[in-house]
Length: 132
Image (cartoon, rainbow, N blue to C red):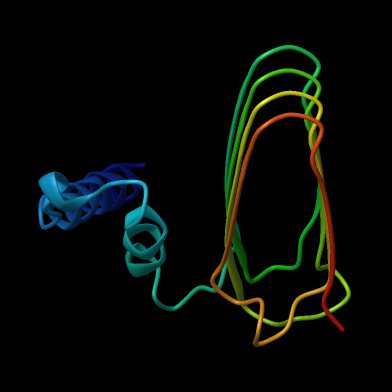
């Protein structure tokens, strides 16, 4: 029991020191995914950041293990369908919708769509994107 307590204490000290190395003034919505990925360089994990402000918004995501995605839906009745679970390609994507009754439907990912940023402003817009 004594050894376990010291191990946990040492781990907490290590994590505390590592987090103090970050320059928090340089972290913003454009750099946060890179900062998160840098915290675990040996692990390839997906990160999702979803913000929905409004009524009846919907986001359906089917992601592979290497997907980093940031989604903002601001308005009412917006829908997002994002599916890249058919591939193991690493993907970084940012999608922002401002308005009402918009639909974004993205299927697949490839080298062209890596780093994709979609920004929709307005009402009653529809985007269908297929990456094969």
